[in-house]
Image (cartoon, rainbow, N blue to C red; front, side):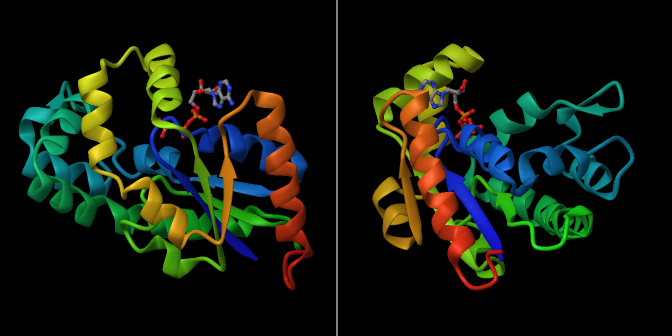
Length: 197
Ligand code: ATP
């Protein structure tokens, strides 16, 4: 059973992925793999440095500069996605070989629906949170200003569309104890499914 876990920026998907891991899942974080996919001298890095030389500083990709460039420009964003996503997917599916037999496989994918990654998984789980909570959590965590956070939100599918497409929704509108309880309930449902072990 392969699950795609998603949610908008600051929704709490990383927090849920940590809980799923604690409950026994094998978690593959595509954000981490996206960094690997552009490691110095990787194919992804070389392709990006040809397209956006200004984003390379001292032989290393400056992800903040790259993010600023592409979040302002939908065409550039598409181009970046087309360069990086195939590498990330290959790395993600290679990682599955490290799971124990029968372990629930959870791919954490920020742009699950936008990039059609949902077609590669059996079930999808959305972590949803009110916009005000998301803005506050990101301001605390990353010290990004509201305009930058809103630009990133605008690059993601609208929350109500994601809700309509997801098989399961975990509402993260309470404290961390409430999140744990909701994540536990959904994890239980996933592992009861045929093939969910
Ligand atoms: P991003 O897309 O930006 O990586 P994310 O969806 O992975 O965000 P998290 O990193 O899980 O979101 O959560 C954002 C921040 O909010 C983290 O610091 C996390 O610990 C905190 N957080 C998440 N849920 C709650 C909650 N219910 N109560 C308090 N803090 C929370």
